[in-house]
Image (cartoon, rainbow, N blue to C red; front, side):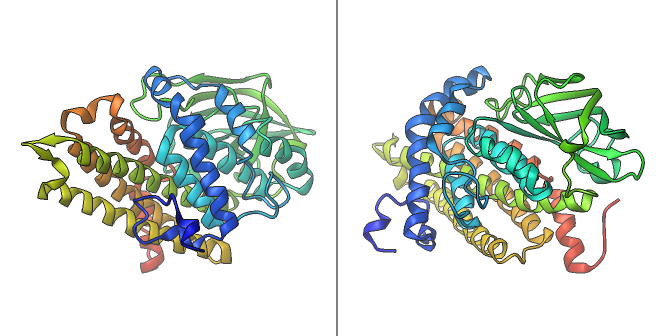
Length: 398
């Protein structure tokens, strides 16, 4: 990578991690950066405050050509790009807005990857091309109203084989994109063998109802829904053929959990950049507050968290590309990076003082959205116990 190619690199990239991308990969990253700044950013605050999802986002993403990049043979870019690039792109999107990044991540990550990793070749060819083109939008339905961390062994949504179809009954909660998604990947426990299986429920299927969750204080742009399934009939051809147990589902979550850690990094970067710019401009006692030692201390601690987290995620991406990463690798990243994110958004908001709680200055949005990222894709506690089991050989799960 030439020094000329580094023009426009983020100020938060203190150790020049972008230099690890090839020239072609960095062009794609810069393309995503420009797209988020030019097309997405103007829509964010108004819709975040109103708690609405701007439907024009789908068309904007469709025109951007950014979907489907991680999947061999699908999407605009062939062959599939590296995990390092997809991670940095998740970071880049969250650097502008975590809600929009989550909309895209649910579709391009959780939903598409479930089909790519768990579906047959026929199913991949049937669904993924139109999803990569953003002509059809996906969602991923696992969490339940009464089940989160214990969903592996306590899934209440059930599936019963009936001839050439399956009948699904139960409920799901916090399901992003579900109010408008064309394909919802629903996870249910087979009543016959007690194993978890995956089903693609298509929009308009009778008995499937998705109601938007109101009153959220984070991810206000995301259309999270509570789903009820009442005798929802799904053909056998819509059952993901490569999923036979929750162990197979865990393979999917292992990959997507790392993406959430990259998203947390993006929130850190976005909040830090806002605080740094504000500190240079805001004057108190006749000088910029960036000259105050205590403000510099907060900025440097934030940069340290960013740099350490970025380094961890770079190595995680390398392990993914090598095909040797394990559950504990992505769990450690998710637990560590989201905890550091919480610190950075709080320090960044602190630098803004009273202005830090006003949406106009953006940092309040990062501060609020960080709480959702901290909790989903496995809480810090659950991810800690996954790592704890790996290093001690002893399970502490209740």
